[in-house]
Length: 217
Length: 253
Image 1: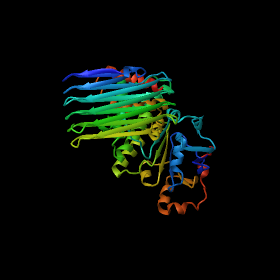
Image 2: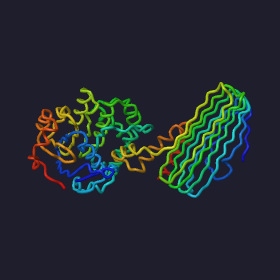
Image 3: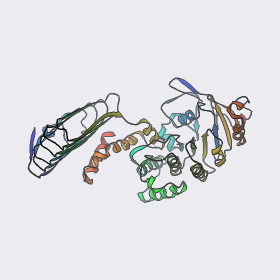
Image 4: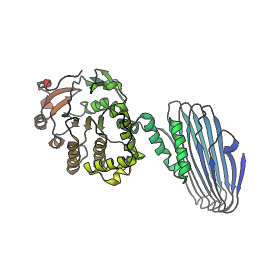
């Protein structure tokens, strides 16, 4: 587990791209006014990889902001667990989590999203969204949003869904001459689009796009 | 050709031959198998061909994947065009056009060439530039979706286009624009199948042949006047006639 302490007003951007070791496990404390942005990319090509991501974050100072954006394409027999724990301990905090996974082959994915708003953490704004697409009959995704809201004057929302690729869209694209692999790539690029645009760095975005294409080929 | 869905036979022996430069209308009551025919021809995986064959420009169509059929020049204007959020019309169309070009052994179009082509074809169906810059069909009105289908047809320049109830959900102005687009695209080298319930569309897209499909078979074939006759007698009246003009179209089974 790695430790990180954001002092008052500090801005920090973490990009996590390797989930097979403990570099993907973090305990982070945020002081007042600090802004933490995490981008998580689970795009490893090793088909036998197992990985565990832990993002344990506590806002201890007011007006702290936490953003977690993640996407992943799990392939082969990969098993990856992503666990987020965001705790609002003080008033006026903000957090947003947006995580999207596509699961191929016989891969297994798991998302456990814990969001805690303590009794005196009034005016917290906390959102959590997890969307998943299964690309094969043997792929599985387990999603478990866990919200514990103890304050009453807060704005909180969450959503979780797991579905399949839209077969009618796939056929429509094929009917225009687009091959299945490319059609899926277009559909999944669209699926990941809102996560990618949060990067705000075109060079990194392009690199991630290429890795998405490789994972889907 | 015979075809079924989920074990239920829908097409029960269809014989049809379409020559270059021809426009064929296929009319028939609900459940006759009109949409099944277009689904089978384009390779929709929900349907199974149980008997017969389809020869498309000398090649065995049924052996091809849906995308190869399209690249070979088969186009379907969908009755219900699909919305694809997040995939831009431009990206979608460029991928489709270049997939076809690659199939033909041609170089992909440059960005400039492609945009020029988009502009030219858009004008043909009076498709708003705003629509061309949005996600595929997302938030388009019924008429815009149909116009967008014909725009895609113009971009891909197919040999055989199937218009599956392209008139449904169109008001008279949109119908006219769509039909004019189809007519402008018509050449001596390509052919069109117009699937429709009503005579109305055939006032604008004038067919060389009209086929009446009922219960999975073509029960009558005639010229464009057959559609007018149908308008008066309804489908019930026509079913009693023998298929006297079947020799107007050859058989291709």
